[in-house]
Length: 304
Image 1 (cartoon, rainbow, N blue to C red):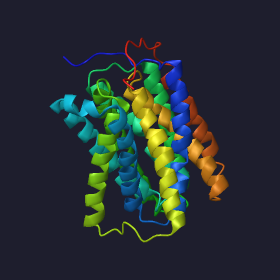
Image 2: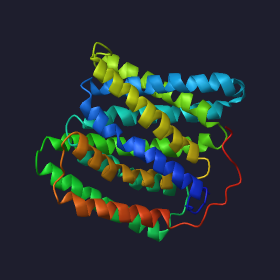
Image 3: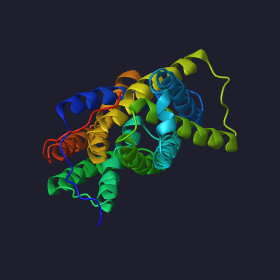
Image 4: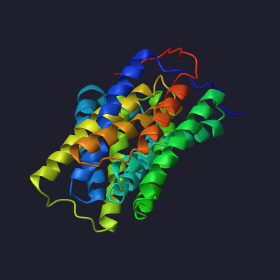
């Protein structure tokens, strides 16, 4: 019989960490649009530089942990890394076809996939959570419909972002298992390295240029790595030790309004008025999901 567990409300400290992570993650879409480097190359350098940066921490503090990793832990982390690489390989290119608002809205559907994955694993998802996810999903559909009516080419971007949403939900769900026994720095290093390998192969197969761009593009890639990658997704990995994958995935819905606001200010991508009520529906749905569970009884903390 499968694992049975009620999705729990995250501890207050995790909510603070999630808010910090979402600020940086929300800025990633606008920065990718502003960068003229090939989309897959941006994804590769983001993961490669992220792995290199976290290796410094691992070598200094957790070098001994590598020898203690079990085969199962290695497989889980590498699998999660490949899923994360697939997420970047689909979501980042989607921003070349559609707007930041539409792309981030579509990728925000990952809580729906996360809930289905959680249910398949035997977890009981409260009715209020399902209603919240459904409400947020309606908001996403409205956003996508408004954007697609402007340009049918956006449908390609919407589809890529939707695939990216599924891969992101799978990555978080698999990562949740490994994060229970592996430190944040060690998991992050292997995770990003696995993603970088997949993306490097993809770039080489697609003959994507990996260098030769302006200093502005390199600065944007570095900012993307430090912000969204190291401070965004690493924090997401950190809270997985005490917060369920479904809650973490649902919280990422906040990326859509955040990225839309940043894109409007920095890039002049002013969304149609029809997007505003849709974004409101998404936020209400997120609150319903997070408030649906009881307070988590955390018995372990992060190893680092």
